[in-house]
Length: 286
Image (cartoon, rainbow, N blue to C red; front, side, top):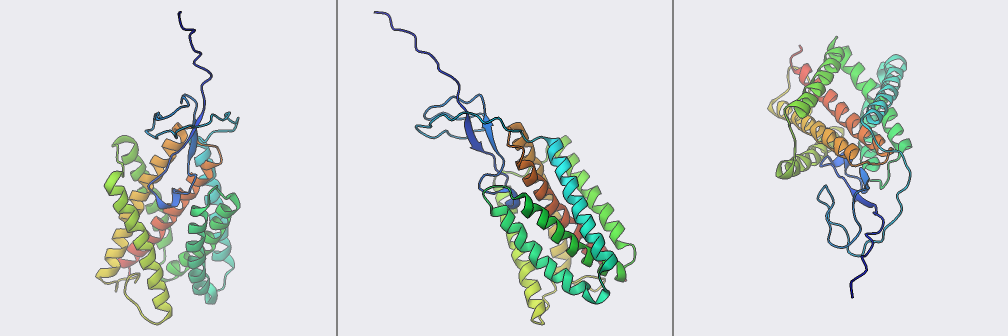
């Protein structure tokens, strides 16, 4: 007897995670996507190399919007505007006597907010907005302090930040610069260690101990130069990882809400780059 041909059945949808090596973009469901061409079954691998689970039960694909580059750009611009507005309030209205308290407390709150938002399973849009506001208040205070000591330094740092970001984007787009594999692991560990060291240095300053890790001005020692230079290198590497994570998320059809995660990661990295450039520029000022 001839066998009756079996129907291939409807194609099923497989939900697989796309993760960045950037610790800010490594939430539990960071840049998840649906692959409409993936067959259900055991032992199969999707186009991005993710092994499908044994006995996967097909689930219908939900009709949701998909993440696009335009979404990420728009949301990044929104967060930048919120941050600039909050910074403007600090710059224009905050008395000089409160600049340092707001700058220091804002730095601590921003540090905690970054990790809270990053570790959430799903993107918290209110959390992202809260971070932009806190970061703006903090940056407004630090920028006014630096500008008071070194007139013109803020404009130089802003220009330097965007120039550096476009240079890194050009290297990613046209030169194929990527941070992957063992190098990515080293960068991630270095970023975490750098953040912990910066936090420890801030706490020790409260206790009257200055390690010289974040000294500014012409009197900055070798450790300050090392920390600032390392900060720029790590920020540039983080930008490369941000760009790749966003591109992979867009290609894989990540939900539209994930564009907030991409914008958040870019904002965190840009702020880090800006504050580091402020420090470096101060080294050349009397």
